[in-house]
Image (cartoon, rainbow, N blue to C red; front, side, top):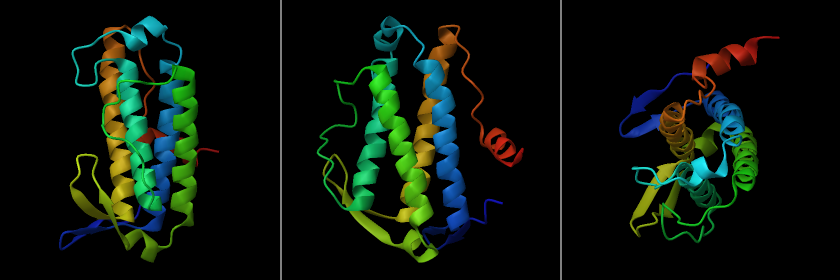
Amino acid sequence: MLGVITEVGRQMEISVNAVQTLTRYKAWADGLFLAVVAGLPESELVAPRPIIFGSLIRTLNHSYSMDYVWQSNLLGRPHGLTTRNPVDHPPIQDLVASQLKLDTWYVDYADSLSHDQLGEVVKFEFIGGDIGAMSRADILLHVVNHTTYHRGHVADMLYHLNVFPPTTDLPVFLQASVTP
């Protein structure tokens, strides 16, 4: 069971179990999805596309880079990035390996948090310089949601290439995770 999410003033309260489930879901979905993307020819990965990130691989690199930024925020360390859309990106195999490693970190991090720690507010600086503050739970929910959004973004690009990505919906993960 995911637990109950309730509105408390402007803060969201979520259970440890829900955060653990969602970070596991993200890792599972990324693994399936990136296995398909990694098989694309380099020419399709870097081909210019009429999207904000410019190409399929840069969209994936944006998603990874933002996961890294939020990891840094959670750990209270500088991330060193000055843009949300880096021009440079690693080769797809390196990007996939880095993303899967970071997904494992998020799973382990969620496993390490108590309910009280989930509610702790983390202050951080946005890449644009503004100051922000969010609970650890809200940051983790954002990381999962942000990646889901961009998997959909990339899936749309794949359909235009006649490549059909795997189904990575949460109910599919939940069913797969309870099936012996």
